[in-house]
Image (cartoon, rainbow, N blue to C red; front, side, top):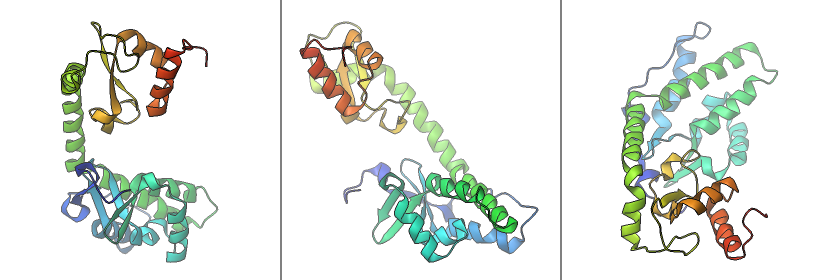
Length: 232
């Protein structure tokens, strides 16, 4: 991730400032339950896009391993699930939960497996805190409100007369095409660099023929000019 961060990529909340309803476990002691809770409260953050992350140094507690083991795990996690803020390194809760789930399915002693299961529930509680859930609902409402007006708004912003997929004149029914689909990444639903203004017919053909993503859109333009749509 580059040093220039958008507001959505910056820390908005620290876990210690959120109300988190941690679960109880009938199999663990209070001290055993407190360990993952403190790891999250002391090292958890939520970004401006409400994505929850936990600092790397908390991984030994959450994965029931040592520093050497957590370093190995961290090295295998993809960049999309990592975040850096100064000298602090974070991992997404979804990536941590994937590792926990894998470990639960391994032949480990019953106490460690119970701890892992409880740690997973604590990460869920962090992710589902009321503040973050309310933020997600507000963002979804904002997106739903903006989408019907988006194509016309962007056309005016770009002063467009022609379809960005075919270069033909825009016609009634033109649409805002999401190169990365809203269903796949709702965070990009309103991001201008993800959206092209296209006529209705090419918009249908883009999706029917699976010209997805930025490269897919470029390929559609190429194939349209070569009269090769549907022949790939």
